[in-house]
Length: 476
Image (cartoon, rainbow, N blue to C red):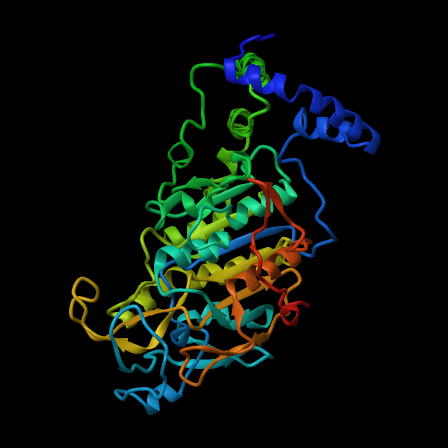
């Protein structure tokens, strides 16, 4: 047992000693003393837990179209733009980040799909075959037309300050169904997206709830997950080493008031050991039958989306798939070329994902989210130094109105909720803020977003801060 104690610790413990005697008595009388002891000592922080009420969703796949896809070119058709092509729109008081000009009609054709007859762009013709399983929210809006704060708002519910990510909140609340894999995985082929690990940070939540980043550009599992294999010590020897290390770490932790950062580090050692037995198989998509690989199609994006399915199939709680590093959907110029290329990388795979989840009996308990941090303007972006290379064939950022769609457990498929104005500039019918989206996601998982909190720095924090409402109209 370690007796190490510095001067400050000694004074702190001596000074509060009498108060702790009274607190111990009070906790004992309330029956809380034993529960607190169990929560701190010997309980796996990733053990499966029940939410506030039975949720229809058990796991989440977030397909993050980072950079801001254009709603008027994907899931929100606006034929009025053709009428005003090359002319100023009669829209006022909507500031954009850069100089914009006349109306820019979509170069893509829309058509109705499914029994619901929802109109979808030719860019997502394969996804549209499943439109009767999808709820399209056309009235999303955020706070500002800038990537960094909008990334943070979409991923953490806060645009400026460090806050836990959506995936961290979900794993904090539900734990995981597979102790041999990370509970929360963030994947992006080719590198990290803008703001890097801030997109899947745990912030003031214990570090064990932070997302594990995987660069799915690699196909070799040893490059996907660094040090996944120990080539020097057999499993039994590793276990003895880890047991000794854990004993020393617990002694160290015991002298430091159960520091949560130390607890997260101890748990990460355990997880790294357990992953050796299952991660190799989980990330190896070559094990899939040829017809499944063909359904998802070629390329890094398709492989990443297939990997997401393999992970949630094995009990991973939350998987985020960022499209690519930087902001791939950020089409300030050459929008027609870029959007067609980007949609082509994921459309087939998204359709295969929905079909695959149904085949495996997982669709009704999995929530799929698709969308970016904001949308794009229905007007053309004017030449701006350093932005669009002098080209006049792209769109600026637009936080006033954009589209996100949901599919899976508890979602009312084949529906459209909300609307932007006749040009697709601003959400005008049933606006849905990002806080509302988060409240709805938590509800589907079984959480009351106003009661799902974590106490930090003397305040009870929540994902939705002091905002948010559940959009009941999108619930099945």
